[in-house]
Image: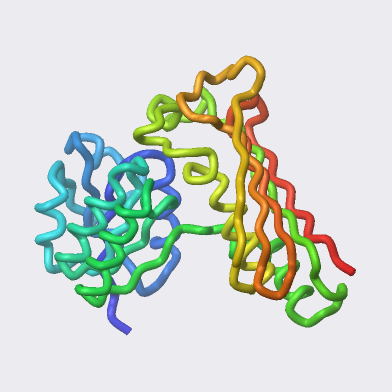
Length: 254
């Protein structure tokens, strides 16, 4: 198999995780990084000792590089749709950080561009490869622990000033919602564990008593799902408390 060239969009902390993953894959090589400031892209390449990596300050220039076949979007949420559409139109395969989009219209536009270009895509729901997730999935699949009737996956993760993304994450326009910015990991986990089509969904959200991290949107939510076979599911998502990160995964079995 030939080596596929990768272009990284963004230079925040998550871009470093993408670079590390591509570095241990014998079939990929990071060949480009784009940032609003070219110096930051150059610094990221030096940090990861990428000797064959070019730095860009314009996405269009990187997308024009024929040595790049895959693009990783590691940018704030509101940029995923326009950048993803541009990459698809350039014929690049996509790895997209969650969330794919902040609204249904944006998602549909990106989906249409991907289908028209016939490029491959994957969303970065990395918990699917977490050993705990893999073990739970296997136990559910072979029926070791009984028949699933209720599943709960909660995402409790304070995203505050200690996170570089905090400045834009608190804004409705760029952060979106508790579920979109972070809790979608739990939603994906719930759907992956249950393995059925959801037929009914409702959700409540609110601010905590004092909104300590000053979010523009309600950063706490509880979502209840009914699946086609009658299985029930629940996702709690909270991002405005001081705890750095705590996830709870508790499928209930008969």
